[in-house]
Length: 298
Image (tube, rainbow, N blue to C red; front, side, top):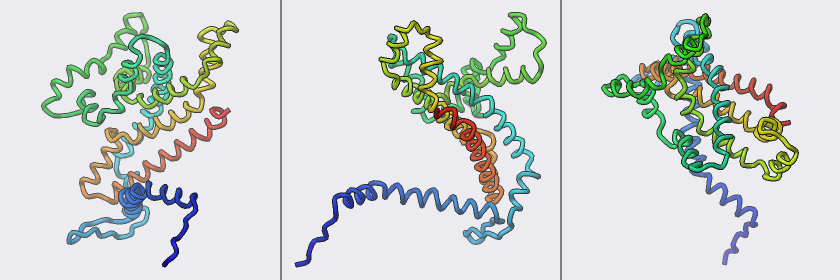
């Protein structure tokens, strides 16, 4: 009789782990790593379709130079995306922190309120957000306008004039209008951030609040001396998540431009655009992490 192979307990646990993630590993290789390598090759090649097969001819950095120097739409969209991310990210972080502090309080209907703010994360946001933000050019636009005008209006400017604020520069006025027009988008994209901040707030021990109350700390002092230090690591995580989420939103103009080039069978140009976009995102995340890691991890 053949002797049975005895596998140590630690070895069996390792095999169970590999078995559990095996399907994920296969999917990652087939649906992520292989397309990733192909897109990198396409970005350095002239791609054509011949007899149903993809033919690539190495051209070096020609595609990268072409999309940066000849495609005005791509560079314009890329600049607009960087500016939008620059002002939108702080607003989302501040709004998420404020809402998380509110939702952490004890009040009637708190569970429903938390569900409402987390709802955009559950909903398939693409088509729903298009309808609400009035980005669909179909027959439903007429009905969508009635709803989306609540969020896209010049009420802020009219309010400032009403209280006597005049003479605002065009740049400031444009920024105020952009923020006002994107109020719904800011709320819509804050679900995950609110959840992370809420988890951090719930991790503050009750004894800390009681000690602060006994010492006579005001709500303002409690926020800056207790709340903020506890949620500092989550601020960095939320900033990075918000930047990535904003850049990779399929509805932004850069992603749409890449999709348009791909649909026009310009695989080399589309791949070069995507890789330039990826490098920019990684550089921005690296800058944020290098400047923030020491302060947020204290």
